[in-house]
Image 1 (tube, helix red, strand yellow):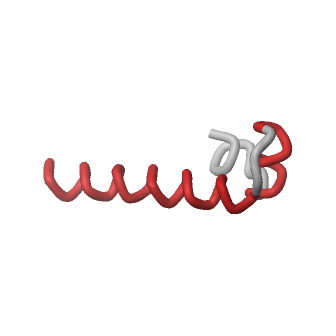
Image 2 (spheres, rainbow, N blue to C red; image 1 turned 90 degrees about the vertical axis):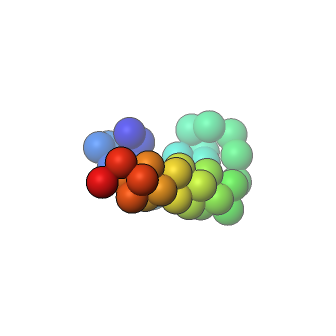
Length: 43
């Protein structure tokens, strides 16, 4: 939501959550991979 709706940068999200930008990047990658996999298996 913060990344794609509020259009915050990874650094801004990290500041809000109290984690590093790199951690935000890893979380986004993991979430997007799960979404992609789910879309491929249900399509």
